[in-house]
Every structure is written in structure tokens, then in C-alpha cells.
Length: 430
Image (cartoon, rainbow, N blue to C red; front, side, top):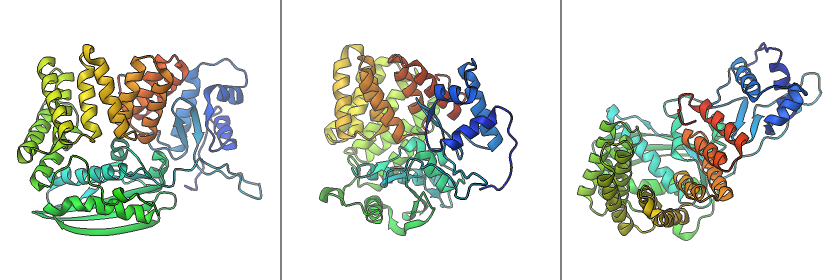
């Protein structure tokens, strides 16, 4: 589509030709060696280098590929359309289609006069994602992968290919005082056409209804028939206090920014404020629990103090909202750090899995408990599902390599770690 020629080195030509002849099909490293190197003895780095050089020649990006996609644990496939000059009809192989009701919620753009309101637009995006994820008929890409495209002016069709979704939701948020304007657009990721768009003008105390309204409108636009109780489902463990809600969104904003001590403490302060404003806000207790987890893992507090506070926060969340999966997940994470409570940790995480089996965080922890118990097949299946929901998450890619390693599938583990390093060359664990 760029209408320009690219020069390829000797080994790059057969590599690209092989992929063109098998367009859309994943090929393993062993198959590549047989078809491209044809019996020559080479190590696995030769293929990785050939793919890397080919991507460079094509101007491709492994993080958001237009031409060559890495399939963790399998190999590579060509995802661009191919035509062969001199042949009357274009020859192309079908690429695996994304699920019809699959969707990615991109971070909404902050159009407020105050740049610091970005926490609010990000939070609205994540809350809409969470509402959609509760609808069983949707496959919703996880936050980590969706937010990779924040502030990147990239073609939505390419984002759809990268995330393997058929639909993309984007929008903007303008907040001024207690007034909020949210514009949402649902776009077909295959052709770039708009399926639905609407602008919502609301006051802060009515912001919660908008999330359900948008989810319902998307369902109708995609002709998804909902169950009765899904048509007006609210976020489990939420609040009706707009000030508590804003404090919670600020807490999530800092929590998602990383684990530097100052950032974690700012997140903790916002979650504490949200709880003070609404003591019945279960999701704020979950945020507080995960913050204590960050404090413990980074040795900002003692393990004894941190685990006690984490347990208390998780228990409060579960008491207030027994069906909130993240509450059970937080409890499971806390119990995992105490080796004497491993069985209780497994029970808590299994309960989180029952409540929300399509959350990549839950799937990874469920995979972890089965990896620890030596249940390789269950662990790998959960890790693959987590990666399917969060395909460009560095941690989800790394975790697949981790469980492949402990299941002794070493080549698959190496492939997954290589894919992780393509996403983030500085990721030390990979």
C-alpha cells in the first residue's frame, strides 16, 4: 500500500517469499529452517536476526506489526495482503478473523482545559472497559494492551490487527467543574467505518449511568442480544459519590504509573480518601489492597505490616461486594506471600476465576497456582487465554514463557521470551 520498492538482502528474500506463499499461516522455527535454510546447520538466532532485518527493511514494528506478526510459542506469520505480479488474479491466503464481538477500548482523549484531568479521561475509559467485560458475549481486550496506544496517532485498522479485534471504541472527555461531556465512537477495525457515535452531556453525579448507557449502545450497534440482567448492569463494588469516584480514579491513575515509592504512596492516599468519602466503596478497598501489595514487593514497608493491611483491605472489599472478583484476587495475592496459607490462596484465586474468567490478571494468577502445583496443561491454557486478552502486555507474554519453561517446553518458552523482548528490549526478567 506504500507504493514503493524495498531492497532486501540475500537471506531476507527467501524468508519473505516463504511467508508470502503461506500468508496468514503461522510457521514454526523448524519449518522455517527446512524451507529457507534447506538443510544448512544454523542456530535459532539466525532466524530471529533474519526476521528482525526483514522488519527493518520493510519499516515494520514488532510492537504494532503491519507485515510480520510473532505468534508466541509458535512462530511467525505474514499479516499483510499479498499479490503476485504477472498472475491474472491476486493470490492471497485468508488471515484468521477476529471474533465478531471482540472490542478494544482505547484511552479516551482529555479535552479539558486542565491537563491534570487526564486521570479522569483514562479512568472513564477503564470503567467502560470493565462494564463491557461483564457482558459475556463480548471479548474485551485488557487495559494493558489497549493503553499501549495512548497518545499514538495510529491507524485504527492496524490497532485492530495488532489486538486481533473487530471493533475499536475511542472517544474524548471534557470536564469543566461538575459538567462532563463524553463523546464515544465505535469503529469497525476491519474497514475503519463508524458503526455508532454519540455525545453525552452529564453532571458528575450522573456520570455512572453513562458507562452502562455506552455499553448498552455498543451492544445494540453490534447486534448483541443481552440477557435481561446485563442490560442495566452497574459496575460491581462501585459508588454513587462523585467525589469518592474521582479520588478512586486518581488512585488508579497513580497505581498504573508504576512502582516508584512516591507514586505508590500517592495512589494509597487517593484510595484512602475515596474510602473516607464512601466507606462502602468496595473497589476503593481493592485499590488499597493492591497498593499495599506494591509497598510490600518493593520493600517500602515490612512484609508483616503490609500483608496485615492488604488482608484487611481485601476482606473489606469481599464483605462489601462478594461477587467482585478483584477482591478475591487481592486476598489470594496476599495469602500467596505467606507459604502457610497457600491452600487458602488457591481457594481465593479460584473464586476470582469463577467470578471473572476473562480477566487477564485473574487468569495469570490462576495459571500461577497451577504452575506451582505442577499442573502444566491447566497453567499453560490459562496463560494463553490471558495473552489472548492482553496480546501486547509485556508481562502476559513473559508469563507464557515462564509457564512453558516450567512445563519443559523450552523452545516455546524461548519464543515467548523473544516476543517479550521485542515488545520491551529492557525487560530484565525475559
